[in-house]
Amino acid sequence: MNKDIFIMLDLETLGNRINPVIAQISAVAFTLEGGVIEGSEFDILVDTESCKSVGLETNHSTIQWWNEQSQDAQDLVFNNPPDNPRTYIEDALNEFTHYITDYKTLGHRVYVWGNGIRADNVWLLSAYKACGKEDPIAYNEDLDYRTLHYIAKKKSGIDVKKITEFDGVPHNAIDDCKYQIKCAMKMWEIIKS
Image (cartoon, rainbow, N blue to C red):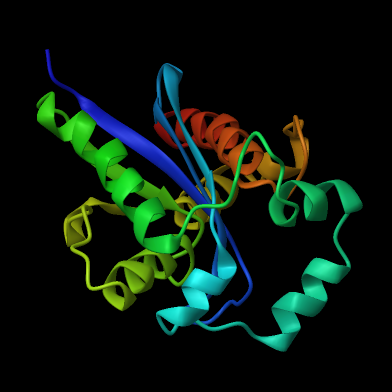
């Protein structure tokens, strides 16, 4: 039986405007009732110079913000480990498109959750546009994690993000995805009750 598949998307970028340079694209498929779908992770480090070459931009405040983050986060996102080389933005987007369409070809409806309507989903769309590629996410398949958080907090008075343990390194996009899924499942339970 085909079902709705949710993808939690998180990007690490060198900007926070509409078309930032992307350093990391991560995604994890999940369901609100069952959590992470086994074998569903997507994680890729992006060559930032390739982003600049297609017109994506940095901004000083975001670069300064990165300088204030943990050394672990900076190393994971910006160092180039031999076992995980950086990928040109065009190739990274092709791989992400395959990741999304693999679920769609199985007949699932795919919804992509981003952390804010002006953040991850739009940033990824701007990269597709800059590279002249078609976005695999339909306009009505975008969902907003921050809205879910707001509604759950309003309903219960509980800030789930403050009481949920973070595993891994904050601002490593794949770890952020998994944390946001744990929170989203708790928020969903609050909203349903």
